[in-house]
Image (tube, rainbow over the protein chains, first blue to last red):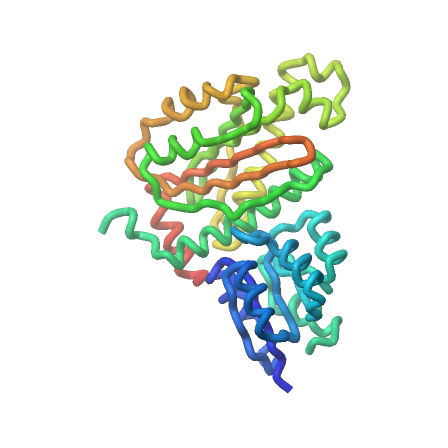
Length: 121
Length: 208
């Protein structure tokens, strides 16, 4: 069964790096958006199975996206992929419903292990 | 081909992301030092004229008239310099936030040492994000204090004094930190020597 994946990151380079390290045998349909506002817009239109969410973005940051998704009662498996590695950021993200946190730069092995741990793949 | 055209939009985007990784590491360090959450913004990366570089630096807003500037150079496969600006407090407040004893607060040498330690930690983290990803060897030189507990207006003198480089353009990384709980602003402005741009571009091409 195909998994719908939303990648939210303002950097094209970063989104490309994430796509590059996705498990090769993961049957996934990827949607990409470049900011928090767009993320919330596409989530209005579609239920995503998995969301990879950046924290530091120019308009609505990832933590506020989580807050808004909670308000909307939007349920998805959200993983933070961010360079913001402060303990407080990880803690707030988890409190707001993120399943786990990947520090950038993301590596294939780490991503695979984490997705397996959460039974996504 | 002008220098401005030597980096594509995608390369600048990649550099911004690499700076973002460095900024995240630096933010975590600052968060540990000050024991408060650090607000991070998307870094600014651009080829700019020196005048623009100076005017960007002058836009530093502290919420306080007092600033400290720590300058540091880096050498190796890419070379350049950084200006770490910290403001929003006078030094007595900073010392208090950092939990130092009163004795240290009145010892100017100690205060400068603390500022240089903070700058060194931030620059190491910022530049490591860039250098590690690009597999470039760089080394930081010792930091030095360019302005200490100085009125904000001194920024103008400091940055315009630097206006004697060999080129009219520079690759600029501007990384801002804000610690809301203690009203502390930091701005790390890194500029690369024009002679390092070829190495940087080659390393980027390998990564992309």
